[in-house]
Amino acid sequence: MGRAARAGVNGSNAAGASTDRPSGEAPEQRAATNATCVPFVSCAMAPRLPDLFDAGRQVTTRRRMPATNQEEHRMKSWHLAIGSFAVTVTAFSVGFAPEPTPAAGMADAYKIDPVHSTAIFRVQHFGAGQFYGRFNDVSGQFTFDGSSAESLTFDVTVKVDSVDTGTAKLDGHLKSPDFFNARENPTLTFRSKSAKLVRGATYSVTGELTIHGVTKSVTVNVEHAGTADQGQGKRCGFEAIFELQRSDYGMTYGIDRGMLGDDTRVIVSLEGVHGAA
Image (cartoon, rainbow, N blue to C red; front, side, top):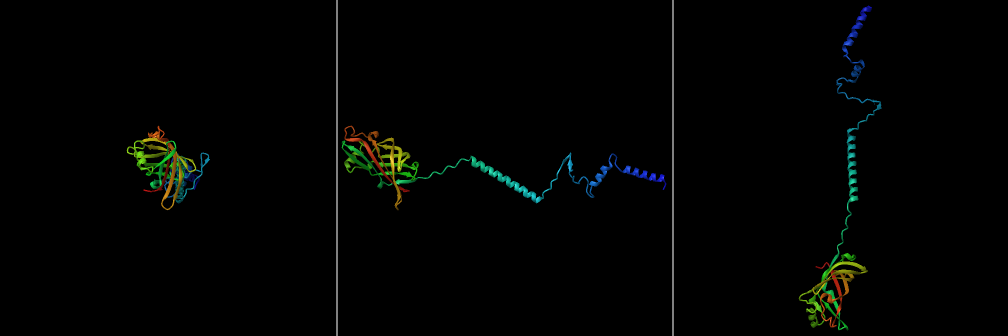
């Protein structure tokens, strides 16, 4: 083939190549596009691979965790969060919750045994001897836990009609309006309000004493005689010895003539049975 013919063929091939390439597209771009596409897969569907260098800084790729490991990691994170929340709530509760109040101990209750309890009084007669009398009907109850003064309480009732001097005539006179006036004021009572330990087994008890219809606040020393169980139920005993002026309770008979003294000594001995109905 001559030189002119070869030139024509080359010119034709060049023209064909120029006709097949879209206008404005560089050969390098077309080659890159053809290299990215995989047979039977659209170029638009092919995943984009991240550039290893982006704007001058290196970009590292993460290796995707398997689905099983991802689930385990997620559960561990969730459990850790719950545990942290529980610890926080517990710490908050311990730090700010009020301290529990200790339960108060229940004091033992004792019913007064009238057979082994008594109330005795003594008053001076004609400025010479001491005259004694007693009340045979003493009832009520008291409480005591064996240790604390706060648990010690008394509720005592004495029937005036049970006065006993050993002489019926004197008993009748003491029940009359000259003295206790049993018809109008059938009982003597003592209701404790507070108690505190003095020493050893001695307690100072303050309460309201009612005699002859007159009520006054008094404070007396009460001695714990003992607590025991001899096979007939638990028993506890107390004794009080104190003095009062009977005139404070409106009982003035015989004082002005010196027949009977005003100062009166009182002895109360109580024995109680625990849990008695």
